[in-house]
Every structure is written in structure tokens, then in C-alpha cells.
Image 1 (cartoon, rainbow, N blue to C red):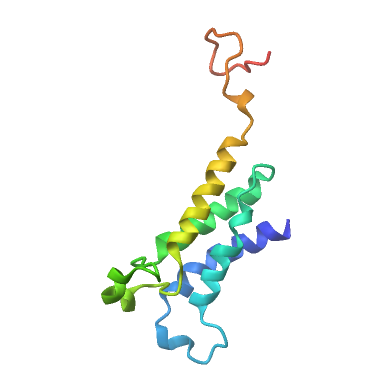
Image 2 (image 1 turned 45 degrees about the vertical axis):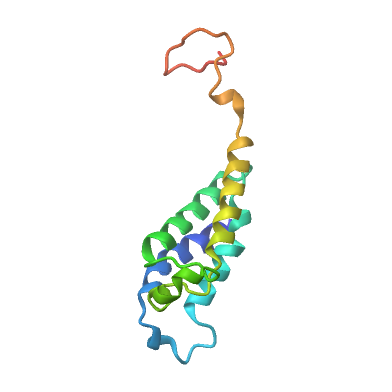
Length: 133
């Protein structure tokens, strides 16, 4: 459960890191934006149907990053060159990350237990009752 705790801590500090002025971390060995980009890519395996707490904290992390960053510009998009200086994470390959994220979300949804929402007898039942009774 150390991963969940670490992800929760990272989620809490993302917004302040993204709001730092660029010249504030000149003496840092690694820019916070580089670390955030690496974290976005590294946490994709956190979307796991077998571990709901890990999946939840990973999605919270993504929500925190995406709600805290400014304009999103893909590094490979030539039409975004004029706004690249205003992008919060200009070194990120957003198209690749979004594609991988959507693949994992679709896989996660397809692996969910189908019996929870299905009605096996075809009739209606009380929403408060368990259909397996």
C-alpha cells in the first residue's frame, strides 16, 4: 500500500509544482515538469482492474495534473509551435499518452465483473436488493 500513499502524496503536490514560475527551479537537477511527464507515463500500469484503490488513486493523479496544467500542446504538433512557450508540459508527447490511457481504460472497463450489473432472470428487481439472492 506504499504505492497508494505515494501516489496520494504526489497528487497533493502536483498543483504547486505546476504553478511554480519556470525560473524558480533553475538550480534543480531535474525540472518538475520533466518529473511530471515521467510520472504520467510511469503510472499508466496503475489502471488495474484487480486493484481498485490503485486505479482510483491513479485516476485522481491524472485529474490533478490535467486540471492544474495550462494549455496542452503535443510536442510533435507543428501547428502548436506558436503556443509552445505557454504550454505547461511542452516536452510531453500527449497524443501517445492519451492513446495509451484510453487503451488501458477500455481494457479496464472490459475486464470489470459483468455479473454485477446483469440481471440473470430477465425480470426487474428492487434496486436495493442483491440480484444474486
